[in-house]
Length: 147
Image 1 (cartoon, rainbow, N blue to C red):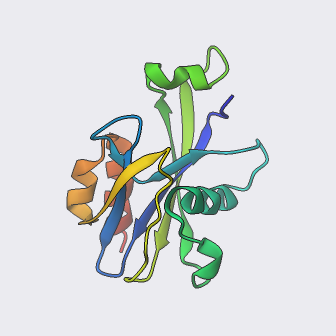
Image 2: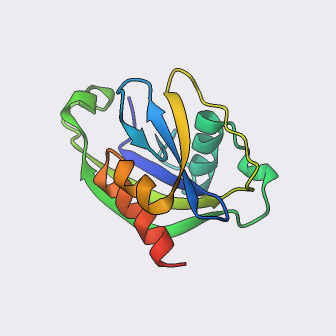
């Protein structure tokens, strides 16, 4: 069963283009990298780095120190009813911790085909609008309103 604590990682380039990935289980559902903790005591930054590698093939430990940073923000949201079967019965909310990851402009992406089927680099405002999750769009806009 999944732990209802997760990370969201907004991956972006120096020109402020943001990486979005399309879910394999929901056509047209575009998002940033997301994923649940593997253990209750897993460090959020380590979970973020793990999810980035699993979903995009980008190895955070090979990027400059400080490329991955906490946005010092978390939200609680209602888990979509069709995805609640992944959690212990009765769990309806998830707490998501936001991160940002700046990658080199020539970064290549290798999707995990069971999870995602396509990716796009978009200007941040267009990326925020394309996200199926309003909070994902908010995370993108919050990142670039602070820079």
